[in-house]
Amino acid sequence: MVAAVCNAQANQGEDFDGTMKKLLMSGVLGNSFNPMRAKPGFVAMAAKVVGQQNAEAKTQEYMDKQMADDMMSVMLPYYKETMSAADATCLWEKCNTPEGKTAAKNCAILTGSDAINAEMTKVLAPVMMNVLLGKSYDKVEAVDCPESYKIKCNKYLEVTGMGSDMIESVLSAIGVMVTQQMSGGDAEKVEIVLNRLKTFMAENIPTIYLNMSYGKISEADFDFYINLYSTPAGKNFITGNKALVKDIMNVSMKLMAKFNDWLQANK
Image (cartoon, rainbow, N blue to C red; front, side, top):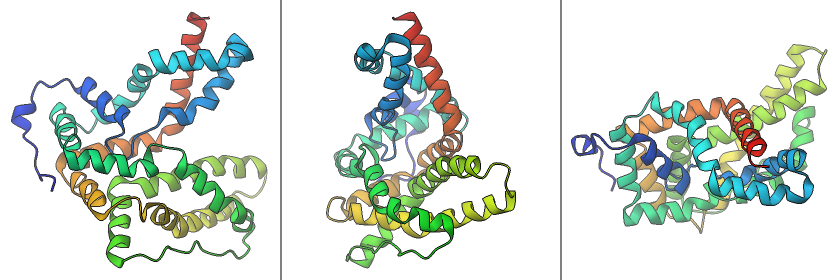
């Protein structure tokens, strides 16, 4: 079990930026950003600067050489507001235990791959129009599994913020589309549509996570992250992470701007 309190005294002086870079880029935190998900957008931007023929190779060069540092420059300010160097070192030490490495590997299906996005699209897309139009729709059916597993999966989503983060992300993306399509229309109607969408997401996204988890992620894996994010260091990380997710559009724009600067300097 993860200790409730880390040895802050032993961690004083640890390099915050370096430790956070290891944490965020390694995927051990159970909710880290996978930069490869952003690759198509970067390739499209690169094509405008270096041409379609060289866009893929130039984007990969950026990801290999510079992207991690640029990501840290735009992401770390959010964590520095809530975390200390001792917090970062605490999390790194806990995540590098055998149980931490196992949990990170197994939970990667929800955090470090495109699998969850593909599943969300497959399940939600067919009924999305009904939701937006206020028509009836079928709720996602949960897999048959022990009640204890459901409880721990929901607790994992709660403490990591993953369920709410996914809802926030989808609402942000679709909200822009809805607002644009209804521009000049009744603001109250836009709000009704978005609230309808929020209800739909809250009802179904946790079930999608549950269905993807069962048989691949153990209760012990969930326990690791539930315990980790119940520590002071874990809570401080989650607070910073929520601020970042809330401002993700701005973060993405800053990162794209850095990529464009790199392209201009490395044509």
